[in-house]
Image 1 (cartoon, helix red, strand yellow):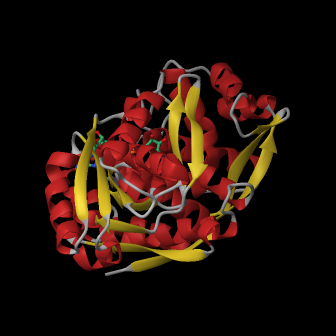
Image 2 (cartoon, protein in one colour):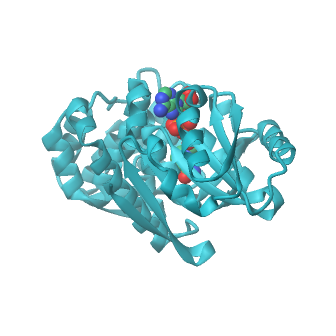
Length: 357
Ligand SMILES: NC(=O)c1ccc[n+]([C@@H]2O[C@H](COP(=O)([O-])OP(=O)(O)OC[C@H]3O[C@@H](n4cnc5c(N)ncnc54)[C@H](O)[C@@H]3O)[C@@H](O)[C@H]2O)c1
């Protein structure tokens, strides 16, 4: 079973990401340190019926007292009202700071349960059990937790490193293809910005079916890359911005098409192809890189082109408003090779010109 170790600055310690297949049915030993304590297992209306029984049985075997809290599935759950309901459920369970919150689900569950764990009684223990590809390779690693505010996404958040992350890649067998694609966008991104060997491997595998046969190794590799970024830049002030490759356009696409029309990973897929083209036009990215990325994403059934109906003007205006905009410039992640990147500040005029080139 691959184990990735993450340096956890806030707790001045390390935590481990355990990755395997069938782990939800064999993880009792991992929970042994919580024997005698309560576990609030937070799931959503999709993951609870699929996986809560198996996880709760393992917790019981470990001598932990589990209780299930089920939230409605979907992004709208990441809101202050559901957060308040979660606190109520913790209080009803008489959860204390000695006890543990276990987040069983995708990024939505991980983010809201994580934020509740970070703030309830000034912080309880947290274990992440991510069940989507996106949450396995991205959101469960790094300690960012949040809920949305009516005025914006993830506006109420905290850094809360988990005690551990338990990833059972077999949970991906029940995930629909579109959600797999959303996670694949992030997997390809890691190859582009930090690991040319991973990019080569993805090219060699060349299809979702072949990739899924090796998904636990690929997830472990992605977690190791994310762990490196988290170690170097725990509070997201510097090098971690490289993880935003493809995001400059992705946010504008999500905004322009209405949030929820494209999944985030789908928008990132289009954004990476565009950013590789911008890099080539600027002379920073080697010629041919965009073609390689486009071909790889196409082989995995991902979108690569800006959908019809969105103008360069509107997208550039939206990018200029991006929260990573620095004064009049938008700090954009540009590849210097497959597996390496740098930040390049671009003005809205430059972005408009690159979009229409
Ligand atoms: N904290 C971070 O660092 C970070 C990073 C990236 C994204 N995020 C957040 O993550 C969220 C998106 O996460 P997501 O893409 O995992 O979405 P999600 O949690 O909404 O899950 C997608 C859908 O799949 C269902 N599902 C989950 N696991 C399943 C399984 N194994 N089988 C069948 N269905 C399953 C869910 O119920 C949901 O309907 C966003 O809110 C985003 O802001 C956070």
